[in-house]
Length: 261
Image (tube, rainbow, N blue to C red):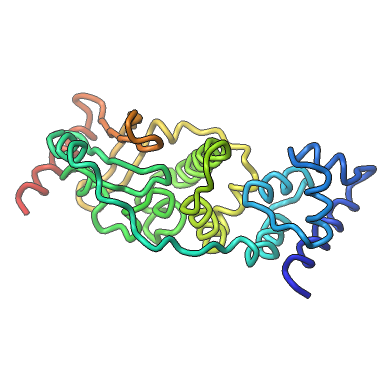
């Protein structure tokens, strides 16, 4: 039996497990047409990650059932890898970031690839396997649980942010990099699948980052996000410590260690 038919059977079984809910109501709650949903159950329609996420909530799937939904649907979500890597960071932005001292600064693209950083930003993420993408850092990096003092809050905030990015992209052209990223995280991280399906997130971790750096110890940093107007979806992340705090002194020490290398 092919993956489309398996997915259709899974959706039909879960819908029928609900009391007095027909295909039209499921479609309405999921924000898709009744015809589209009917084709999903027939095994003739390929869903998007967004539709799968919505159906997991509408069908009231628990974490195990949501994982099974992704397992069944995953072969249908594969997209070709993009032939070229990201373009080099804008030279003027790079010069601006390089000249920013005393605080870590990162330039991220729409899917949170780190496109540029100042010396302190690079030192903050140095040694992490997935320092090149902040979503992969949160969910796929083996060191994430040590680096993020409150990893669960950070991961929830990351999943919540990815939901926002996906929602914003729905009104724009197809975004293969976003689809590829969601597929990779779904395939490799059970925690991501659980948090992505739940989407009942509330955390201050977008604003406050509590980190444990291997060289300078614990840091509490406040993250300000500046949108780059001429590069839609690009963000400059500025991480500041409270003036006079141990975290500010730890950043200064990290800066001195970086300068001495």
